[in-house]
Length: 222
Image (cartoon, rainbow, N blue to C red):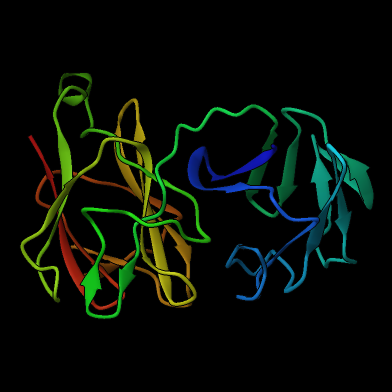
Protein backbone atom coordinates (compact mmCIF):
# COMPACT_ATOMS: atom_id res chain seq x y z
CA UNK A 1 0.00 0.00 0.00
CA UNK A 2 1.29 3.46 -0.87
CA UNK A 3 1.84 6.29 1.57
CA UNK A 4 2.50 10.02 1.43
CA UNK A 5 5.12 11.78 3.54
CA UNK A 6 4.47 15.53 3.79
CA UNK A 7 7.40 17.82 4.58
CA UNK A 8 8.11 21.53 4.82
CA UNK A 9 11.67 22.84 4.53
CA UNK A 10 12.98 19.32 5.05
CA UNK A 11 10.90 18.73 8.20
CA UNK A 12 8.45 15.83 7.99
CA UNK A 13 5.12 17.01 9.41
CA UNK A 14 2.78 14.17 8.60
CA UNK A 15 2.48 10.75 7.02
CA UNK A 16 -0.70 9.44 5.40
CA UNK A 17 -1.43 5.89 4.23
CA UNK A 18 -3.42 5.71 1.00
CA UNK A 19 -6.27 3.36 1.88
CA UNK A 20 -9.28 4.85 0.07
CA UNK A 21 -10.28 4.98 -3.60
CA UNK A 22 -10.19 8.78 -3.35
CA UNK A 23 -8.01 10.84 -1.02
CA UNK A 24 -8.57 14.60 -1.13
CA UNK A 25 -5.91 17.21 -0.42
CA UNK A 26 -6.46 20.88 0.35
CA UNK A 27 -6.65 23.70 2.87
CA UNK A 28 -10.23 23.06 4.05
CA UNK A 29 -10.59 20.93 7.21
CA UNK A 30 -12.84 18.33 5.53
CA UNK A 31 -10.04 17.11 3.25
CA UNK A 32 -8.35 13.79 3.99
CA UNK A 33 -4.98 15.58 3.92
CA UNK A 34 -5.24 19.10 5.33
CA UNK A 35 -2.46 21.60 4.59
CA UNK A 36 -3.29 24.88 6.29
CA UNK A 37 -1.41 27.27 4.05
CA UNK A 38 -2.66 30.09 1.82
CA UNK A 39 -0.67 28.71 -1.14
CA UNK A 40 -2.90 25.63 -1.03
CA UNK A 41 -6.42 25.84 -2.47
CA UNK A 42 -9.43 24.80 -0.38
CA UNK A 43 -9.83 21.74 -2.61
CA UNK A 44 -6.43 21.46 -4.26
CA UNK A 45 -6.02 17.92 -5.61
CA UNK A 46 -7.35 14.39 -5.33
CA UNK A 47 -5.50 11.07 -5.33
CA UNK A 48 -7.37 8.21 -6.97
CA UNK A 49 -6.43 4.59 -6.41
CA UNK A 50 -7.08 2.30 -9.37
CA UNK A 51 -6.01 -1.22 -8.50
CA UNK A 52 -2.39 -0.86 -7.38
CA UNK A 53 -1.95 2.44 -9.25
CA UNK A 54 -2.39 5.90 -7.73
CA UNK A 55 -3.20 8.92 -9.91
CA UNK A 56 -3.16 12.55 -8.79
CA UNK A 57 -5.60 15.09 -10.26
CA UNK A 58 -5.21 18.83 -9.85
CA UNK A 59 -8.64 20.35 -9.09
CA UNK A 60 -8.03 23.62 -10.97
CA UNK A 61 -6.04 24.91 -8.01
CA UNK A 62 -4.85 28.51 -7.92
CA UNK A 63 -1.12 27.75 -7.66
CA UNK A 64 -1.03 24.40 -9.44
CA UNK A 65 0.28 20.94 -8.59
CA UNK A 66 3.82 19.92 -9.51
CA UNK A 67 5.47 16.51 -9.70
CA UNK A 68 9.26 16.46 -9.66
CA UNK A 69 9.24 20.14 -10.65
CA UNK A 70 6.79 19.81 -13.56
CA UNK A 71 3.23 21.19 -13.53
CA UNK A 72 0.61 18.47 -14.01
CA UNK A 73 -3.15 18.17 -14.33
CA UNK A 74 -3.36 14.40 -13.98
CA UNK A 75 -0.53 11.90 -13.64
CA UNK A 76 0.20 8.39 -12.46
CA UNK A 77 2.46 8.46 -9.40
CA UNK A 78 5.61 6.36 -9.26
CA UNK A 79 7.61 5.33 -6.20
CA UNK A 80 9.69 8.27 -4.88
CA UNK A 81 7.80 10.90 -6.92
CA UNK A 82 7.69 14.26 -5.15
CA UNK A 83 4.45 16.24 -5.36
CA UNK A 84 4.99 19.96 -4.76
CA UNK A 85 2.18 22.22 -3.55
CA UNK A 86 3.31 25.67 -2.50
CA UNK A 87 6.29 25.22 -0.17
CA UNK A 88 5.19 21.70 0.74
CA UNK A 89 6.74 18.54 -0.66
CA UNK A 90 4.80 15.28 -0.60
CA UNK A 91 6.85 12.13 -1.22
CA UNK A 92 4.96 9.13 -2.62
CA UNK A 93 6.31 5.81 -1.33
CA UNK A 94 5.08 2.31 -2.08
CA UNK A 95 7.15 0.41 0.48
CA UNK A 96 5.68 -0.90 3.70
CA UNK A 97 8.26 0.66 6.02
CA UNK A 98 6.98 2.98 8.72
CA UNK A 99 9.46 5.19 10.55
CA UNK A 100 6.88 7.52 11.98
CA UNK A 101 4.89 7.40 15.16
CA UNK A 102 1.14 7.99 15.16
CA UNK A 103 0.02 11.50 15.96
CA UNK A 104 -0.36 12.38 19.60
CA UNK A 105 -3.55 14.36 20.11
CA UNK A 106 -4.46 16.76 22.87
CA UNK A 107 -8.17 16.21 23.34
CA UNK A 108 -10.08 18.96 25.14
CA UNK A 109 -8.81 18.86 28.72
CA UNK A 110 -6.22 16.15 28.26
CA UNK A 111 -3.29 15.00 26.18
CA UNK A 112 -2.84 11.39 25.10
CA UNK A 113 0.88 11.15 25.62
CA UNK A 114 1.30 7.70 27.07
CA UNK A 115 -0.73 5.78 24.47
CA UNK A 116 -0.90 7.68 21.18
CA UNK A 117 -3.98 6.87 19.15
CA UNK A 118 -4.30 6.95 15.36
CA UNK A 119 -5.36 10.28 13.90
CA UNK A 120 -5.81 11.95 10.49
CA UNK A 121 -2.47 13.64 10.92
CA UNK A 122 0.79 11.70 10.60
CA UNK A 123 3.41 10.91 13.22
CA UNK A 124 5.90 13.14 15.02
CA UNK A 125 9.58 13.02 15.41
CA UNK A 126 11.87 14.47 17.96
CA UNK A 127 15.59 15.09 17.58
CA UNK A 128 18.10 16.03 20.29
CA UNK A 129 19.40 19.55 21.01
CA UNK A 130 21.71 21.33 18.68
CA UNK A 131 25.35 20.39 18.46
CA UNK A 132 26.81 16.96 17.76
CA UNK A 133 27.61 16.37 21.42
CA UNK A 134 23.93 16.62 22.33
CA UNK A 135 22.66 14.06 19.81
CA UNK A 136 22.82 11.19 22.28
CA UNK A 137 20.70 12.95 24.92
CA UNK A 138 17.14 11.84 25.56
CA UNK A 139 14.41 14.37 24.79
CA UNK A 140 10.86 14.54 26.07
CA UNK A 141 7.77 16.73 26.33
CA UNK A 142 6.37 17.44 29.80
CA UNK A 143 2.75 18.56 30.12
CA UNK A 144 2.37 21.43 32.58
CA UNK A 145 -1.35 22.27 32.41
CA UNK A 146 -4.70 20.59 31.83
CA UNK A 147 -5.91 17.14 32.88
CA UNK A 148 -2.64 15.54 31.73
CA UNK A 149 -0.44 17.90 33.77
CA UNK A 150 2.63 16.15 35.13
CA UNK A 151 2.78 13.52 32.38
CA UNK A 152 5.92 13.22 30.31
CA UNK A 153 6.51 11.47 26.99
CA UNK A 154 9.90 10.54 25.61
CA UNK A 155 10.50 11.57 22.01
CA UNK A 156 11.78 8.42 20.35
CA UNK A 157 10.49 8.85 16.79
CA UNK A 158 11.64 11.13 14.00
CA UNK A 159 8.40 13.14 13.96
CA UNK A 160 5.85 13.69 16.73
CA UNK A 161 2.68 15.73 16.19
CA UNK A 162 0.77 17.32 19.05
CA UNK A 163 -2.46 19.30 19.15
CA UNK A 164 -6.12 19.06 18.21
CA UNK A 165 -6.77 18.33 14.49
CA UNK A 166 -8.87 21.08 12.95
CA UNK A 167 -7.93 23.48 15.75
CA UNK A 168 -4.16 23.66 16.26
CA UNK A 169 -1.44 21.13 15.45
CA UNK A 170 2.36 21.34 15.63
CA UNK A 171 5.15 18.87 14.93
CA UNK A 172 8.45 18.25 16.69
CA UNK A 173 11.08 16.83 14.35
CA UNK A 174 14.43 15.24 15.13
CA UNK A 175 17.20 16.52 12.86
CA UNK A 176 20.90 15.64 12.91
CA UNK A 177 21.56 19.09 14.39
CA UNK A 178 18.78 19.00 16.98
CA UNK A 179 15.01 19.22 17.48
CA UNK A 180 12.77 21.75 15.71
CA UNK A 181 9.12 22.69 16.11
CA UNK A 182 6.87 23.51 13.16
CA UNK A 183 3.33 24.83 12.74
CA UNK A 184 1.20 22.24 10.92
CA UNK A 185 -2.45 23.22 11.13
CA UNK A 186 -4.76 25.89 12.50
CA UNK A 187 -5.25 29.64 12.20
CA UNK A 188 -3.46 30.21 15.52
CA UNK A 189 0.22 29.30 15.66
CA UNK A 190 1.89 27.73 18.70
CA UNK A 191 3.95 29.93 20.99
CA UNK A 192 7.53 29.25 22.06
CA UNK A 193 8.67 30.87 25.31
CA UNK A 194 5.69 33.22 25.14
CA UNK A 195 6.35 34.34 21.56
CA UNK A 196 4.08 33.24 18.70
CA UNK A 197 5.94 31.11 16.14
CA UNK A 198 6.40 33.26 13.04
CA UNK A 199 8.88 31.25 10.99
CA UNK A 200 7.92 27.88 9.49
CA UNK A 201 10.25 26.13 11.95
CA UNK A 202 12.17 27.03 15.11
CA UNK A 203 14.95 25.18 16.96
CA UNK A 204 14.22 23.78 20.43
CA UNK A 205 16.52 23.76 23.44
CA UNK A 206 16.04 22.14 26.82
CA UNK A 207 13.68 24.12 29.02
CA UNK A 208 11.77 25.79 26.17
CA UNK A 209 8.10 26.42 26.96
CA UNK A 210 5.49 25.54 24.32
CA UNK A 211 1.83 26.56 24.38
CA UNK A 212 -0.51 24.78 21.97
CA UNK A 213 -4.31 24.53 21.87
CA UNK A 214 -4.52 25.97 25.39
CA UNK A 215 -2.07 23.48 26.87
CA UNK A 216 1.37 24.39 28.25
CA UNK A 217 4.28 22.01 27.73
CA UNK A 218 8.02 22.05 28.29
CA UNK A 219 10.68 20.57 26.02
CA UNK A 220 13.27 18.77 28.13
CA UNK A 221 16.53 17.22 27.01
CA UNK A 222 19.33 15.65 28.96
